[in-house]
Length: 362
Image 1 (cartoon, rainbow, N blue to C red):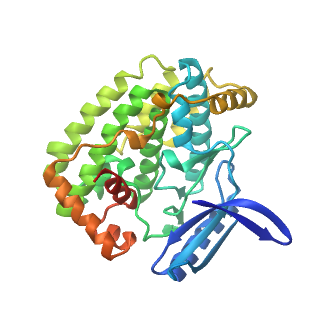
Image 2: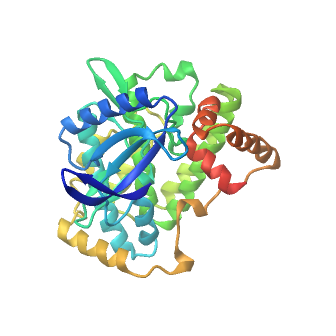
Image 3: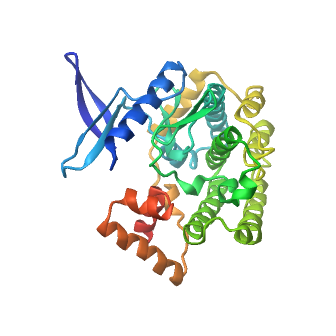
C-alpha cells in the first residue's frame, strides 16, 4: 500500500493505493469490479469501498490492478493493538467494546445481504478520526445471489493463520456444512480472533499460538492434503488446549464480551455463534459508551508516546520451526526466486501472508 495523488474532474487529493499483481488481469479486474459494484449497491455503513479501480502494467511491465481508497487517519487494527496493550484495563475494555459493536454491526449487515469477507484479519479494519470502524480489503470476498456464489478474485489466497478449524476438515466432514454456513462461520471465527487479540496482551500472546498452529496445519495440508488423522490426532487436541488457556484470561472482562468471544471461537462450525447472535448480545452491554467519549479516548491513546520496550505487534511473536521444517519452507522460498509469489501460493495452496512470514523468519 502506498500514497498517491488522485485527480478526477479537476479535483486533486491524496489517497491510499493498493496494488494487486495479477496474471489474468482482465478476468480478475472484471470479477473484482462486479463484486465492489454489488458491495456499493448494498449501501452498507462500516465498509471501506475503493474510490476507483484500474488495471494497467506496472513499472516492470507486469499485469496489475490498482485500487484507490480514502486515507484513514488513525490506522488499522495492528496499529490500534500496539496502543491498546499499554492502555489501562478500563480504557482497553471501553475501546474493545466499541470495536466489537461496530464490527459485529457491519458483519451482521453484510451477512444479511449474503456478502462474506472470507479473509478478515487484524489488518482488515480501519479507524477514522471520528472513531468510525471500517471493514476493508474485500479482495477475496464472496457474495451469494439466487443460489450462485460470486468471488471478487478467486485466485487470491486467504491468510490461513486466521482460518477456522473446519478449513482443515476432511472433505467428507466439510460436506456436512452448507456453503453459506461455511462462509458465515469463517467470518465469525476470524472476527472472534481479532476481538480477543484486542482485550489484553496475554490473550494476544496466546492467540499467536493459534496462528502458529494454523501455519503448521497449512503446511501439512500443502504436503499431504486434508488428513483425517492429522486433524483429529494433533490439530484438534492442540487447538482445544490453546482455547482453554485463552479463555482463562477472559474471566475479568465484561460478561457480554466474553460470551461473544467464546461463541465466535466455538470449534464446531455447526454451533458457532453467528454475527447476528453476537451483535444482539453485545448491543445490550452497559460498557458501550457514546461515540464522543470513545473518540476522545482514541485520540488520547493514539497521540500518546508509545514506550519502545512495550511496542507489540503480531510479527513479534513468531513460531519456532524445526530444522526439517525450515528446510521445507526454504524450498518454497527458493521457488519465489524463479516464479511469482501468486503462482507459488496457488501451486502449494498456502497463503501469500504465509510466504511473507517465512521470508522474515528464515
